[in-house]
Image (cartoon, rainbow, N blue to C red; front, side, top):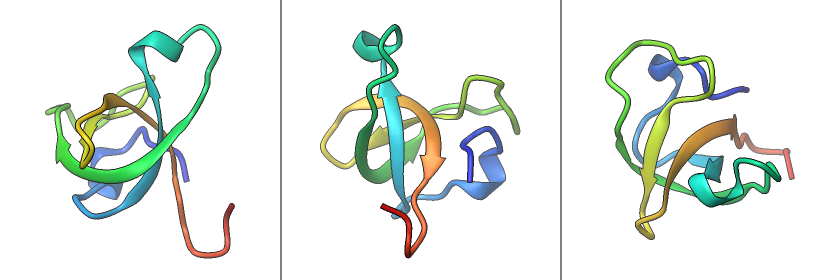
Length: 68
């Protein structure tokens, strides 16, 4: 699942994000959502979140069971 719909993302989900420093390369960082930072219901580049480890980035994929 992609991360463009705010309604699909909630605290506690495991997601892959792109942090600001890695936007050019597209390097993904995996973590658990702590806070949602985007207020609009959708965003074309992904909903901005803060992970439990403090990193902030835009959600590219929501990790589901069975995906690696």
